[in-house]
Amino acid sequence: MEGLASFRAVPSFTSRPRSSILGTALNPRRGNSLSLPSSSSSNVRAQQTESKDDEPEPVKIELKIKEWENSMYHNEVAASQGIRIRRRPPTGPPLHYVGPFEFRLQNEGNTPRNILEEIIWHKDTQVAQLKERQPLYSLKKALDNAPPVRDFVGALRAANSRTGLPGLIAEVKKASPSRGVLRENFDPVEIAQAYEKGGAACLSVLADEKFFQGSYDNMMAIRDAGVKCPLLCKEFIIEAWQIYYARSKGADAILLIAAVLPDLDIKYMTKICKMLGMATLVEVHDEREMDRVLGIEEVEFIGINNRNLETFEVDISNTKKLLEGKRGEEIRKRDIIVVGESGLFTPDDIAYVQEAGVKAVLVGESIVKQSDPEKGVAGLFGKDISLKSV
Ligand SMILES: O=P(O)(O)OC[C@@H](O)[C@@H](O)c1c[nH]c2ccccc12
Image (cartoon, rainbow, N blue to C red; front, side, top):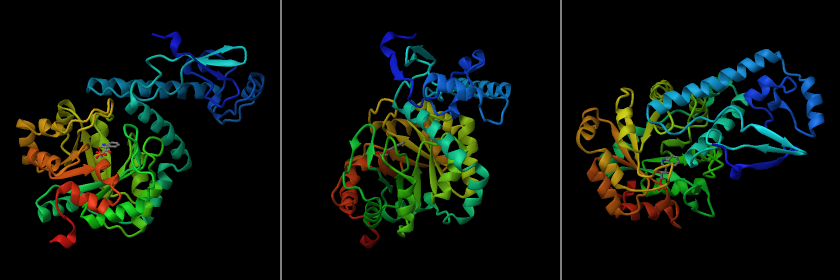
């Protein structure tokens, strides 16, 4: 249902994509407007008739239709698996013109329904742009120069047997959509080194810029500074291309979010990671996602997020709930390493999730906020877990 409240006026001189699939198909004066610098409408029309794109118009229209069908198909498959996050529709809301203004009618179908969906739609656009600059074949070549992969899960297992406590994945995170800026004077390398000194087994480095103020540069800087902890590239992965990209930037592990990715994507991306020697942390939030993920035989490493990424609600009893009964049994039988993620602040929280069955924890806020993150690690566990402690 389209509502008046969702009208947004956009002056026509802004550089917005200027076509919808139907608009393109039905309106012969509109070309592949994504490549057009927009100006006054007459100017736009003039440029459209002299479109310099190689593809003839009917082919372009067909490609757009395919693109649209694919995203509809993805959404149907995803919905059948209980996934609520949809893929970005290939075009924005339809345009309406009143005098010099463009109006976009926003409705359920073309507006993100929650923050996770908004992040995924933004990621889709960003990845499309990055891919154009560095297509897969050249990315694959870049892998020859990437630093070697380190054993992420092995480091967690080793820490767990060394300390008798869950191995720590300490998160280098400046900000988040739910908490805002967590640390003003943010030096990623200094923080990473402090975590390592404090006894972290691995690090998670936020790569998303827009919503988490992270970057791939941070990850590379941490590696280049000689930090030995294996690195999880904390990114919203929706395409295999991003896995190669993360590897080319020195990642040892990546995250796949079950709330976003259908089973087949998880299976296929996990295989790609294995081929590249990387670990794949598959993140779940509820029973349904856990069951889906346990149904994928390639999965060996599962994160239980205590934060609902659609609503931001945090409840650490989620970890316990998802490890009870048959699920817990199967996880033990398959020797799957489980990570308790988010909302962990105190030694009691750590003991609680350990009791529930996790062998590792992923912690950001509580330690990144400390003026001395090295001490923050000891505070979190209630004791010194650094290498010098044993
Ligand atoms: O800062 P916290 O509450 O300790 O949470 C860390 C980590 O679990 C959280 O950042 C996280 C878990 N899964 C994610 C997926 C994307 C972005 C971030 C996350």
